[in-house]
Length: 72
Image (cartoon, rainbow, N blue to C red; front, side, top):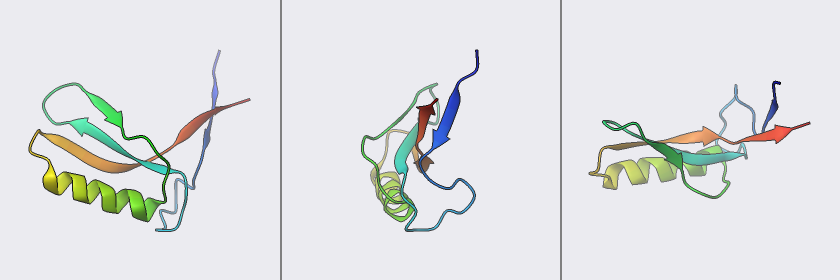
Protein backbone atom coordinates (compact mmCIF):
# COMPACT_ATOMS: atom_id res chain seq x y z
CA UNK A 1 0.00 0.00 0.00
CA UNK A 2 1.42 3.35 -1.06
CA UNK A 3 1.53 6.32 1.27
CA UNK A 4 1.00 9.96 0.47
CA UNK A 5 3.77 12.44 1.23
CA UNK A 6 2.97 16.13 1.53
CA UNK A 7 5.61 18.80 1.04
CA UNK A 8 5.84 21.66 3.53
CA UNK A 9 7.27 24.02 0.90
CA UNK A 10 7.39 24.48 -2.86
CA UNK A 11 9.86 21.98 -4.38
CA UNK A 12 10.27 23.90 -7.67
CA UNK A 13 10.82 27.47 -6.46
CA UNK A 14 13.51 27.72 -3.85
CA UNK A 15 13.03 31.31 -2.75
CA UNK A 16 14.86 32.52 0.34
CA UNK A 17 11.58 33.22 2.19
CA UNK A 18 9.92 29.84 1.46
CA UNK A 19 9.15 27.95 4.70
CA UNK A 20 9.32 24.18 5.25
CA UNK A 21 13.04 23.40 5.04
CA UNK A 22 15.63 21.93 7.39
CA UNK A 23 19.36 21.17 7.15
CA UNK A 24 20.16 17.65 5.95
CA UNK A 25 23.55 15.96 5.89
CA UNK A 26 25.26 12.97 4.28
CA UNK A 27 28.62 11.43 5.05
CA UNK A 28 31.02 11.36 2.10
CA UNK A 29 32.63 8.01 2.82
CA UNK A 30 30.21 6.10 5.02
CA UNK A 31 26.58 5.17 4.33
CA UNK A 32 25.09 7.59 6.83
CA UNK A 33 22.63 10.43 6.46
CA UNK A 34 20.40 12.50 8.71
CA UNK A 35 19.03 15.93 9.37
CA UNK A 36 19.09 18.61 12.03
CA UNK A 37 15.90 19.29 13.96
CA UNK A 38 13.91 22.46 13.42
CA UNK A 39 11.98 24.04 10.58
CA UNK A 40 13.27 27.17 8.85
CA UNK A 41 13.06 29.04 5.57
CA UNK A 42 15.13 28.04 2.55
CA UNK A 43 17.44 31.04 3.00
CA UNK A 44 18.06 30.24 6.67
CA UNK A 45 18.66 26.55 5.90
CA UNK A 46 21.10 27.37 3.08
CA UNK A 47 23.04 29.80 5.30
CA UNK A 48 23.18 27.31 8.19
CA UNK A 49 24.30 24.52 5.81
CA UNK A 50 27.09 26.72 4.42
CA UNK A 51 28.19 27.63 7.94
CA UNK A 52 28.27 23.98 9.06
CA UNK A 53 30.08 22.94 5.86
CA UNK A 54 32.81 25.52 6.49
CA UNK A 55 33.38 24.22 10.03
CA UNK A 56 33.18 20.49 9.21
CA UNK A 57 36.28 18.32 9.08
CA UNK A 58 34.52 14.97 9.54
CA UNK A 59 33.59 14.37 5.89
CA UNK A 60 29.94 15.41 5.95
CA UNK A 61 28.06 17.39 3.30
CA UNK A 62 25.29 19.75 4.49
CA UNK A 63 22.39 21.00 2.34
CA UNK A 64 18.91 22.53 2.66
CA UNK A 65 16.28 19.78 2.59
CA UNK A 66 12.52 20.03 1.99
CA UNK A 67 10.47 18.57 4.84
CA UNK A 68 8.03 15.81 3.84
CA UNK A 69 5.14 14.72 6.06
CA UNK A 70 2.69 11.85 5.83
CA UNK A 71 -0.77 12.76 4.58
CA UNK A 72 -4.12 11.06 4.22
